[in-house]
Amino acid sequence: MTAKLIKGTELRDKILEEIEAEVNEIKEKHGVVPGLVTILAGEDPASISYVTAKIKTAHKLGFNEIQDTQPADLSEEALLEIVEKYNKDDSINGILVQLPLPKHIDDKKILNAIDPDKDVDGFHPVNVGRLMIGGDAIKFPPCTPAGIQEMIVRSGVETSGAEVVVVGRSNIVGKPIANLMLQKGPGANSTVTIVHTRTKDLAAHCKRADILIVAAGVPGLVKPEWIKPGACVIDVGVNRIGEKISEKTGKKIAILSGDVDFDAAKEIAGYITPVPGGVGPMTITMLMKNTLKSLKFKLGIA
Ligand code: NAP
Image (cartoon, rainbow, N blue to C red; front, side, top):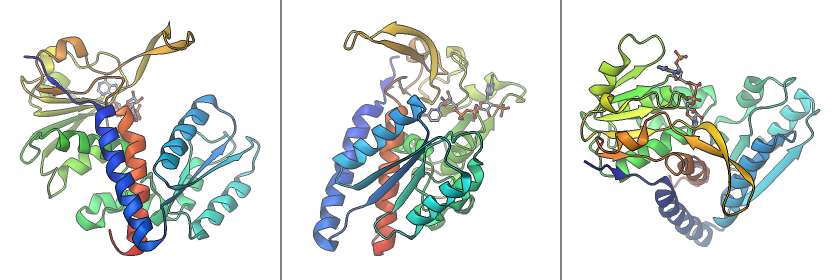
């Protein structure tokens, strides 16, 4: 069997087109566009490249986008004031503080200061609570898990009654995707198991999965014999396993691998995501979707 590839890059393009169309419609009817601010403290090259990608996407979609770059020695108090400024700014619907923050700043304190109704990353305790409650209470599902659910649903994979096994219990991926798949409603209604480093028989759990979502950060953790024939395998892992010279730019780039032995797994699974080009491109896409949603909530049209 050769699995159907779920390409995050293709889905991203399709969803961004849908978002752009909605942005144009709202602009015409209501005279406003979504506003997104990304706050970056310091000059960490990886953070700069993430923020640039987010702002570029927002710009392409016609959002009002602000990149607020601050020095690394900015005080915690000053950063809290900046967050508060955007909390009060009516033209801003989404506030994103790029992590990691400089060591002298308490991440949690800053994230908790964001207005939950502008917390488009979905990490504020209020939004975590809304996710637990489920249904209409959910405002901003965290971006990577929301992207994973979109990939499953848009591939036509049946989720209702499906055995979903999630490898990993982080607050960013494992726990929220487990919660999303557990919801009562379309695209969910699954029976969910979460496994982690203390799980007794990881292989036995994985073998039962109709949908296997792996977010461990361990290259090749999931062996092909752990995959149920025909299962949908979502590999969230992004692991740097070496370096190579890019043919396009001539510069050194990282060789990436997922948590699943892709070449062998694709012969057994029914659906599989590649790394790179799988879950990765969906994260920014869902950030844009949450920002648009935030504006729609404000306009009462969500
Ligand atoms: P994390 O916070 O390090 O959590 C990893 C989880 O996997 C933990 O719950 C850990 O269990 C579990 N785990 C690790 N090794 C395991 C093993 N041998 N057997 C069973 N469980 C194991 O990582 P994360 O932030 O969730 O990220 C996971 C991976 O996804 C990383 O590779 C990350 O780069 C990638 N990621 C990708 C995207 C994207 O594509 N957009 C976004 C976020 C993350 P314990 O809790 O017991 O330690």
